[in-house]
Image (cartoon, rainbow, N blue to C red; front, side, top):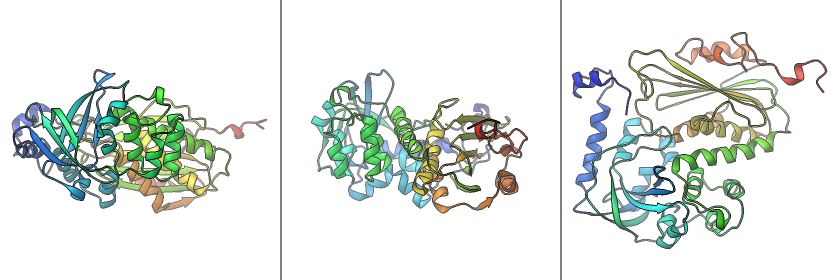
Length: 413
C-alpha cells in the first residue's frame, strides 16, 4: 500500500485526489481485484497459469503454495499476467502491471517444505516451470476474498482462496536443461549456475529453486519465494564475481543510466578490483516514506571478496545486472549504483524491475566516459532530482571522502 497518511485518504475518499496522483491507487486495485472475484462462478475456476506460483513463508516449514490462474484466460493470452521480462521490454506502466496482478486468482494449497516430492506427483510444480502457459482447474473451499497484497520483493498478489484440489489439464513443457536438472544429484548452487549458463531465464530458475526441484535429492526443500529470489541473485553474482576477479580492469570511468516505473538508476564503473557501492534514495511521499517527510538515503558496500555491510534484495537484483555486463565484457571494475525512487512509484511491484532496468542500462552502453569520476559529476547531478546524492558515495569521492585502494598504500605489493 502507498504510504499516504490515513487522514488524507479519509478526507479524499478516492475522488478529491489530495495525494496528487492522477487516480486513487487503493480504489484501482480493489476494483480490479473485485472484478476477478466476480468472474469466479461458484467455487470452480478455470484458466491457464502464466505460469506463476508463490510460496509463502508464514508458518515455515508448513507453508502455503499459491498457483496463479487468471479466471477465464487460456493459452498464450495468460502469459502476460506473470512475465517480468515482457513487462520491462514493453515498458508497461505501473498501473497496467498492478491491474494484471490484481486480475489473477491464487489457488492455495498447504505444503510441507521438507517434502517437495509431493509437488512432483501432482504436476503442480512442473506446471509452474513450464515454458508456456498450462491449463489448470481449481476447486475452491470458499469464494475468493477481493484484496491485493504488496511486498517489497515479490510481485503483487491478487485475491486468493484455499483449494480443495488443483488439476493440471494440459501438458507442461520444460526447457530441456531444466528438465534434466530436476534429476541431477548435485549442489543447488552448481545447478543454478549451469542452468543460467545454458540460457534458462532467471525467473524459471527462481521458481525451480523455490519449489525444491534443485539440489541433492535428500537435501531438497521448498523455499519461500522471497528467499529464493535473493538466493538465486546471490548465487549467480558470486559465480560471476569469481569469474572476473583476475581479469584486467577497465581503463576509465563510465556512466550508465536507466529509468522505469518511477525508479532512476545511475551506474558508474571505475577502474578497480571489484568493490560495489549501493546508494538508495527515497523521495518523500513514496512507498516507504511518509507524506511531507525528508528523503531517506540508504548506503550499502560490498568488497571484492563479496563481504557486505548489509543484506538487501534490491541491491542483489541490481548487482547481478552489473556483474553480467562485466562478465560478458571480460573486465573487472568498481561499481557505484545509485537508485533514486520518485513519488510516481506509489506501490511496490517486486525486485524484477530493478534487475531488468539495470540490465537494460548496461546493454545500452555508457552515456558518458571520463578519465575519473570528477569528469562525470555534472552529468550525474543533471540526471538526479536530489541534489548532492552522488556525494554520498565513497568510491566516487565527489564529496571529498574517496575510499582508498590497497595498491595506493606505500609498500603494497
